[in-house]
Length: 427
Ligand SMILES: Cc1cc2nc3c(=O)[nH]c(=O)nc-3n(C[C@H](O)[C@H](O)[C@H](O)COP(=O)(O)OP(=O)(O)OC[C@H]3O[C@@H](n4cnc5c(N)ncnc54)[C@H](O)[C@@H]3O)c2cc1C
Image (cartoon, rainbow, N blue to C red):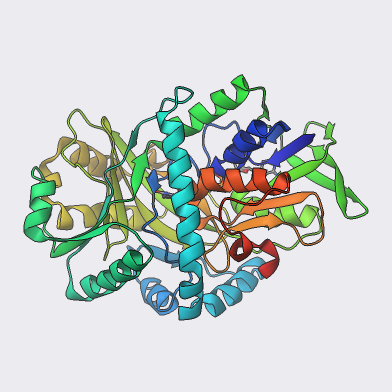
């Protein structure tokens, strides 16, 4: 049985891995060269802690306030575009307590499954990538954010997550070199982190060794159907693919890809930036999120990455410098020890120079669904099309688990976790 996957991000490659394991003959079509997509420059977090979907109460009013601050972590590019209006209206409608409550269990189940499967990859001889299981600490500096975080901690513990509230002194013991200037924090001990660039490179070579065909620089430009079934994919090099099953894992471009199959899938790109420097010595022991600033910091053995922002709008190449500066300026407020750190100084100096920004600032487009939950399941009108998209801020965290579910759905087997909440037909 032959399967084609549209898109070679973490979702496409994870799906290829488990479909190949289940005995499918798999071809991945990727229009880029698989050296850089959203799955590369992300923060590398595997986050069971992120069981609250992006569509939650308060996010719209906070977002509107932030739109007037050039350095804020959130921005909607105002434009008269139907995809944005359509997506925006549905997103606003989903920002309610009910969405948060009903999402928590399915999100947690898939996040934990995915975390377990990624740990299996990390421990197997097949793969070699940096992977750490020492949780993630969310730091707060204000009473307001402490209150909000304690509510999340309570909900997380109800879901069975291992979370510790830390005082400032306990944090100083965990981060003795940097002694964060914070009121306190929540340590999500089920979280893990890895180096996504290496994982993506490894996945590609593992898949190729297993006989998966990865066709880079090949865009799927057309989808032909007969009796509600895809029979042909038209490709940018003029050739065509025919087979039994298609998986749509085209990230932020999934709306357009779905339209080729006559399907409706509201996905908006949510641009984010990250900056990475090499470090000789790593003073930070745990990945962390600076809650008020919405900035994430990931320490690897020889690298440090800082990232943030959510710019909702069409895919574009612009780098909004004030937002990048906003990310860097937040760091010394929480981690004053970094001001003297050569790696951080180098990063700030490079950004100040404003030249060659593209070589210093990475950006990627998170595929945002309308309610913060991914779309995983069979398409409404196409019987051999599985959708795997809309993973928003959690594509890496959901990656392996999504791949496993795709393979189980393809074989008509019971799924490892419930999938009804992820049904693409819900929109
Ligand atoms: C700054 C930042 C930090 C992040 N940090 C984290 C994190 O710490 N943890 C986490 O879990 N997630 C994180 N994310 C989110 C995560 O990176 C994404 O959710 C994930 O990469 C999405 O993967 P994907 O495979 O769906 O999409 P992508 O990685 O974008 O891959 C989709 C691919 O499809 C290809 N494609 C599209 N259309 C076609 C076509 N017609 N034919 C052929 N190919 C096509 C594209 O070229 C692309 O390569 C972060 C994102 C950003 C921006």
